[in-house]
View (cartoon, rainbow, N blue to C red):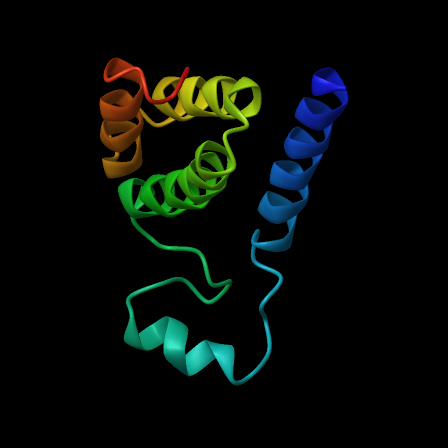
Length: 105
């Protein structure tokens, strides 16, 4: 059962990442993108900002899994955040929770 849940979480993350990969090309999105310093496709122009945004999305899922006490799903997701986005705020938050033992209760 837990392997099935892990697969479900991974698929959810992949789908969320695919949905946010610049598909907002509507005319109403362009002025907002220009005002916030983002590219026309809606992605941040700064690679650090892009990493922060992706890490934040993953962290929100990680935090939801921890709140629901689905630690078998949260721990691998948290480890991926730390591995893939080591210099982000989200990675720092994950490290705190994993180090405190709250990520693996």
